[in-house]
Length: 122
Image 1: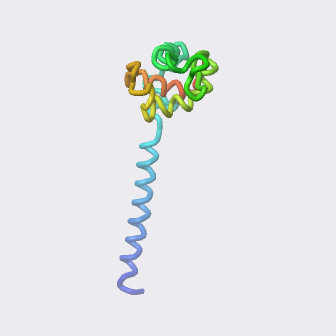
Image 2 (image 1 turned 180 degrees about the horizontal axis):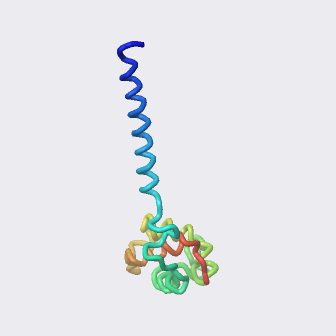
Image 3 (image 1 turned 180 degrees about the vertical axis):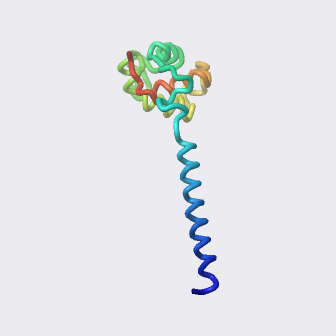
């Protein structure tokens, strides 16, 4: 046994401990606020997000002129576009374009919660 053996063992133990702490930190960082992803225990209903989509999105995303065919007029169309809505209105905030319709951060959060909860139209 060399003089360096105990030092090497300590370094290995330190590396393992650092890895465990880092993984625990990532797990805490990525977990939703509650098990269902909501912040107050209340499920977001479609009736709460429908007016947001109608006022902030459907002004452009309706009829045959809807950009990229992304119509947001019916509950089914809105639910079908949930992933895209989350990406462009909640995460990147590039929509509404230039925030022309004045979507608030609270409205974005509510949309995001509805989508994380499964984007139910009921």
